Image (cartoon, rainbow, N blue to C red; front, side, top):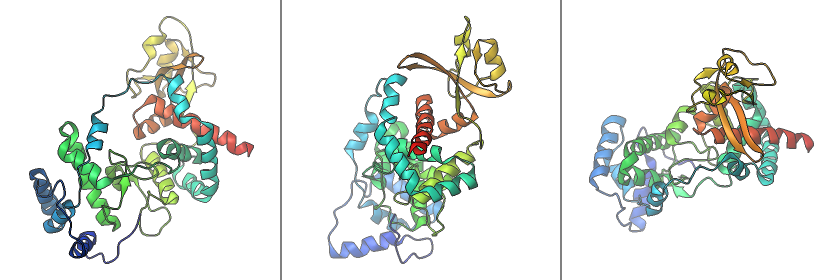
Length: 336
């Protein structure tokens, strides 16, 4: 993240700079310049959040509508892969090797994050590994283009992306950065941990204490931000994430959770034929699920920390990939 000089009050110097550049090189109107929805949005940001309307209007002369983004988000969802096919996407020798290297290179920050937030280093590394291959693939779209395209040209989720566009402009003002300089995914997810702007403003932290939050190319801030996200969402230090279950009887399927949220506790599941090698408290709420593994059906109990991981991405298989990658990173690091 590149900081801009000359920050003045609550106005945006990146727009002043754009004006200087425009005097040197003519700039053609952007795809959203003076569009009705843009005008309405600019009015809201000026009225409710103190932005100068003329400066925002100037910004939108540089914003581009990206058809590739609309194509990507409108593409029919792929058939959900079974666990035996999903797991190999994220659990690879290359991802484990690079994770060990990332851990080694950022050991001090990871150790401090574990101490301050109670989140073990391996889970922080695993999140960043699954999300962006440790920063190797953080997205190449300008966030301003992505969010504007989806806010103004994708009606099914326009309210959500309009909110994220608002949050993005607020964070660029707070962090004193040029909104046209920041890149991310086609949906506007940003940096090593792929935070949406609203998550950035709620959970990202200045972990290196330099006065700015940079999750794009500052691993220390990214590490602290992931750890803070987990802590705020209820991570329990020292507790496991998931336990394999042995099942028996004719009522096993009655215990399966219809969604991610836990609906039964350990005691209730035990009565339906679910058991674990290690004893768990009867009153602990858990998510019970079955996966199609390479060796056949696998039955698992997702514990409270499993539920925390699903706050990052609401997917059982995502949480399992993060958990198992974390375990393998510990094992690989111990063998180095």
